[in-house]
Structure formats: structure tokens, C-alpha cells
Length: 301
Image (cartoon, rainbow, N blue to C red; front, side, top):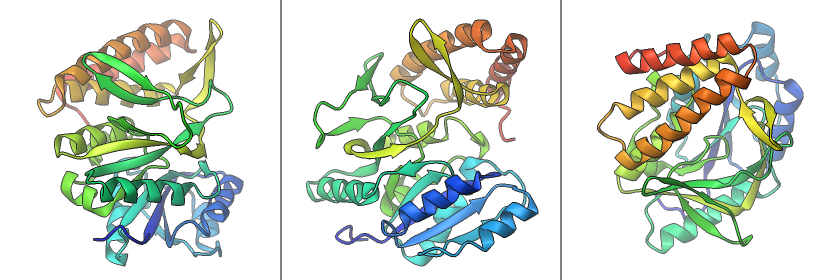
């Protein structure tokens, strides 16, 4: 399918969304995409009724899953809908993300230029800022056994990365057909990393686009430590984070150097959150439980 003209579907995954933030996202997307689908992951009946009554342009299609099926499943449902509408690309969003005006067009133009130059594009993604953390976080690439933080030295720079966070990630439909869908069994956490590595194994390349910007809150309120703001999550999210990481380390399909680099970072996180995340015992237990379930291959919800 040609990338000469955009025909983009925005896929928003909602779970008891903040209504003001969701409306702001829909308003911001009105002149950036051709279609919007909201996949609701088990919100209350009144929330779903409110979403169904939203009247913006383009008017979003609501798909209700009825229960929390996980981010990966919701994204796959949205992608399937986009494929039926004939879209040539999809862009994923959490319900509380906020792209800057023109962000989607900047991403699409970068993707089109890369494709025209012969690159086999997996995805392109923006720089995001979280007002609670040190900004903007760098793009990530693994070089040998090291994590290289790709900081943008020019506004027009486009940098190679191994994976992107899912929110704000623009993906050509051809890449999804080649690399396959998100892995439902991961439920949440490492879904974007897993897909990015799988796309790389399929001969595709992901890129960070420095001129594209988005506001996005990553996780819960960060922990201040020695002058730095460390990203933080709930004990349940730490369970999924550690479970899915360890499961991926045990699989033969992912790069060995990534396993070493990411495993080292995971070990540091285990020590840090065991000591500084409150309640400490709860975080330690959920991380430890996640490691155990990852070792035995227990996935899904």
C-alpha cells in the first residue's frame, strides 16, 4: 500500500479514562488523522455511554471489550478495525497522551521520506515529555551490550532505535503484516519492546523523530533520588514488568545482547524498587512473583 498520501487511523485504548484528557486528545487529533477508534478495556457502563456519545470530527468508532483484556489485545482489535477501513498506517495512543499540533503529520512525512529512500520502516515515534520527570527522555538503542541513549542534537534529526513506547507510535500497515500483531499474552508492559524487537528480526527498523513532540505521563508519580526523577509504577505493574521481561529473556527469538543489557537494568530496578518504592514489601513481593511466573512461562492476565 502506498505511503504517498496519509490514510491514518488513530487507535486509543481506554480504561476508566479521565474524560477531560480524552476529549483533549480527540480535539487535538481532529485534523491529524482520517479515522479514530477507541477500544475500551472494561470501563464502567456510564463511562462507555459517555464515550459512545462523543461527537467530534472524525467521530470515533467505539469498540467495547467488556472486560480488561490488556493493552496488547485492545491494540490488536483496533488494528484489525483499521485494516478493514483501508488505512495505510495506524498510530497508537493511551487515552491520556497529548500530541502537539501537527505531530502525526511530522511522523508520517518522516516515514514517507524513509520509505522513499529505501528504508524498511517498522515504526516512527515522537519525543515525549512528562512534566513530572527529567525531559525529554532519550530514544533507546542497544549497541553491543550497552544501552545507548539517543539524544536529539538537531530538531530535524531522525535516529535509529530498537523500539518505541507504544503511545504516539505510527506504524505502516505493511510493517504490521510483516512483523505480526502485538503479543496478547503479555497483557501490559514490554508489549511495545517485544514488537519492536520482533519487527527488527523481520528486517524492519524503528526510528525516533526528534521534531515530533507529545506530552505523556509514564506510570505513577516518580521517585526523587539523588537529584533525579526515577519512573515509578504500582506493584501490579511491576509484576507484569518483571514477569514479561524474564519470559522474554528465556525465549530464543530475541537478541542476546538485548537480553544482557535489559537484564542488567532489570536487576538494578529490582534492587532500587525493593528499597525505595513504598510499600516496600508489596513491591518486592510482586516483582519476585513476576520473576517466578516469567521463569515458568505463566502469562496472560
